[in-house]
Amino acid sequence: MVELKRIYWNRQALKMAYSAVVVWLGASVVLALMPKADAAARHNASTVAEILRSMVDGVLAAVIVPGLFLVVLTVVAAVIRARDLKRRDPVRRFSRQQRREGLARAGGQCEMESGLRRRCPRPAEHGDHFYPWSKGGSTSMQNFVAACARCNRTKGARVPSPGQQERLERRRRTYVTLEDAVAVGERQPLG
Image (cartoon, rainbow, N blue to C red):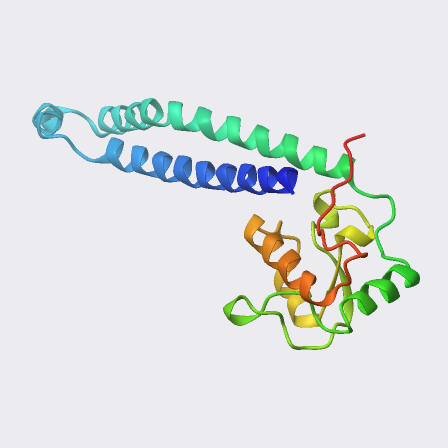
């Protein structure tokens, strides 16, 4: 669980940093294009070409630092994506036996959250990778979650939050026998 928590928060931090840098980049461009009081007096006698050249120079100077941050974040995201591809389990689909066991473990009911963080009341139709297969989640019983079609589509390939993982494990304790595992989420090793 510690690993999945770290992965989730690292990805959230990357998304927030990317958004902040995009805002910073946009604000830098806008501020660079805003006329300055003393510059307006100097540019009265200037040609249009000189004015445009000074605007372009100002914008370029303003976007260098946020642009470099954006490039670094893009490279980090590309490395993460490449590692996710290397982690992919060669087996994409759960076997019939795994599907039968997983649906039986869930009592045929969807294990995902619906409104107010409660267990979805709909019947389970799918076996979902709790930690998404596309992001390196394994095709194992620990990563199997019984899901209805709506919950499966809604979750998509998003990495669940640590809170969602804890709540699912807590809910499983109410319907899974003590001998069976209640832990959820498993990721393939990098290799």
